[in-house]
Length: 361
Figure 1 (cartoon, one colour):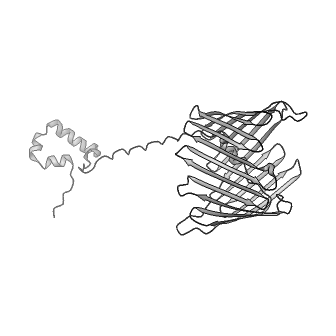
Figure 2 (figure 1 turned 135 degrees about the vertical axis):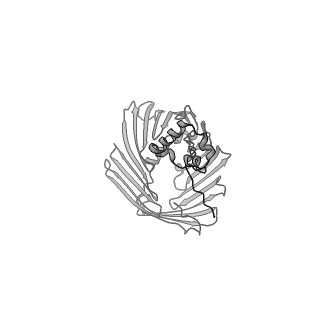
Figure 3 (figure 1 turned 180 degrees about the vertical axis):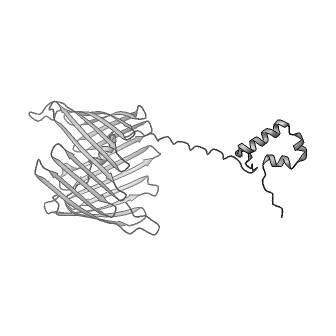
């Protein structure tokens, strides 16, 4: 077998007399000069060596624009921090999967102040259609409360909700409500109609002005003393890891002796996303003409299998709530101004997931 070794250009010329004769005197001189002092020029050149092509640059993904939010959720980041599921005593929650779409729930409260006897039991059920567009919830308890709720989605933007809360022992706590919501990429609309001892109707509107700025308002009409109105306006500015929200509301006079007239209240919220898991937020509120003010600080830390919420305000109240995906939780609320202390623990019992399914978080 013949093996061909790569040779340099000068060696190839020497092996071919015809090419050696075509070399000029200057070529012979500079050829030897190049071979003596420029060794890189004598390096072998392989036909199969091709310079590497430049790798295509990955296209930079543009961040997705935030859709318009419903007015009641315009400060949703702060709500995730401040709205805590606080309770007292010991609570046990059990879930039972009846069918693929129906689930039964049981809740037992022991050592609670929700009832004078110190215990409470709730039974409920949750139905969710396979396409997750229909949700039905129902719950009944020993305290005489019966609650029901339905959520139905139409298309990609419309949603209809209806709920009913009835108390067999206190008729004044009965409430029935229905709403229609539209959540689009540029605007959000909502209309509500409720009965709570009097007719209550309202609507809200939010419009996206800029990719980072949303503005809107809310108007509620109550059938008391003729017609009483409650109005709000607000804005939301979100850029990067910073979210700033502000609302201004006007409430009518309560009619109580010595109470002020119309009260205007300003609330401002700021949330900073420190990391993907940690959020810090604050709330400032000021009302006029009574000139009451308050400040709250809160945090939310999300572990892989747990969530921690904490809140501190200038009214002397401290609260914390911890939930673990394994089914354990802790709640604590201390009101130093009133001298009220409330602590609780929860244990959740869920059915074992079927093979190939992940446990619920």
